[in-house]
Image 1 (cartoon, rainbow over the protein chains, first blue to last red):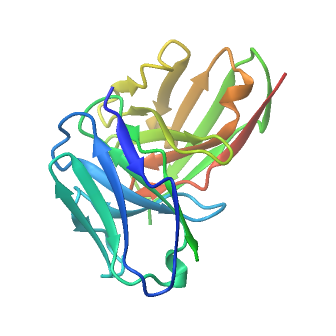
Image 2 (tube, each protein chain N blue to C red):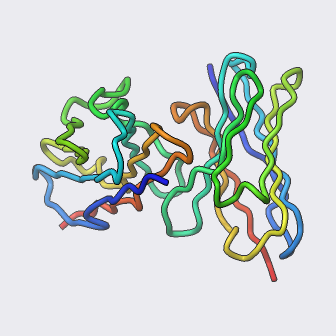
Length: 107
Length: 112
């Protein structure tokens, strides 16, 4: 199985900060990665498709990038509505696998 | 618009079989895949398996021996059955159309 190592597991940041969350894939997944945002009691919301493509309706302060086997989700300037859990998912190979998640809180 | 909604028993006894239904609207199951994802309380997401537009299925290897996904296209319903439940199967169970549209999830508690 492909392991997705997500870091950090939790972080606190101030409004206006630049925030970066990373997933490292244990095998080549190409760009077959989705980033999700999940708020308490809600379903996951796709934010970034294919590693770098912004989903419909997602604010432009969110972006996705790739460097080798490392995939990053960046929030350019943190807003209060961005406080949530974030998950990555690889869909290159079965079984599809998620990262362990990152809890983003306010400092 | 596309909507999915899960339904299930809420509480299941240990060693019993879980049966969940995902009712979809606004899409055809013969043109779309539906996946099941679960999330234990306070933990991360786990992909369980999927049924593809042609009716073929894929399962998480860790669950494969206990899991079955099927569908009734005429009723726009997808079914999940998992046997030999243990307390660690306690989770919110989601169905999703290839990760873009999601149901609200249904909580399943396995009691010993």
